[in-house]
Length: 346
Image 1: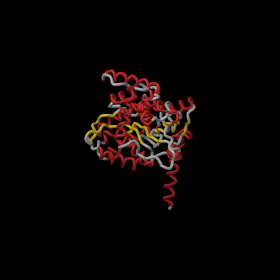
Image 2 (image 1 turned 120 degrees about the horizontal axis):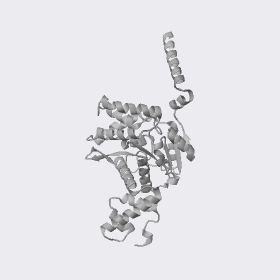
Image 3 (image 1 turned 90 degrees about the vertical axis):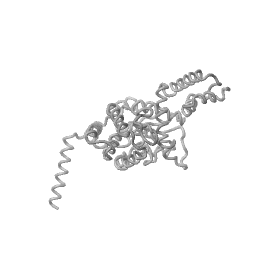
């Protein structure tokens, strides 16, 4: 094999390897190595891929492979690479993309909890089972901080609730949940940032631990390129209750973004990532521009330390920090009393 046929960089190698995974032998024969025995090809291919992954993304091959599984599952669920096609009148910056977290970055509150309440309305489970979820939503809303244990247990609950359910029915339910409970809770400032990237010809991807269908519908509603999320396995048009790839929380987002960047040959130094949570520092750290939106305390401190951009579009928690809870309660009661008095006069 001539040197001209071998990928010229780790990025090129990973782009080919990622899209050929599942038929590694053919990839190695055609791209990397002359025909040799199967075991030697496997070992050589794994070693080459591991070195390229480490050099390009700073993660190991198992983590990258899990990210490839997550991205592959998301693209299969979407039925293609892009949910929204780029504007043909806008020149495309093919190496650049923006990655947005969803919860408290794009929309107010927890999308996973909203999803669970939507399932409850359709009697996927009972009120006793929804009580812990309600507590998690209250804690998230008051603190603005994601809790890893809540994310893990929420993911397990969601998978168990959809097990054996029809995929098409759940898709319809997700559309109803997004339109009824999420779209109107989006932050206008975040949407403006996403629009800026699209106008510059850059892809815009949602990256969230929420079920991938929720992210994809949000991407469709807002005209974004696509969405990566937690993917539930499908067989015969029904959910198995098993997970495909990572839960996209914390390091899982980094693995999925690395896989997407390899498949699409993105230059992460030209990319931007947005999040509210310190849990997403692994994703924020891998791109050229990191932006903390409505950050929790830990992320804000890290953003200031690293010189990252900080944007805050919240209102209630900002008011609490400015005036305090007692003053706000007094103001609310005064406003309520004034409305009652006016009602009696009228």
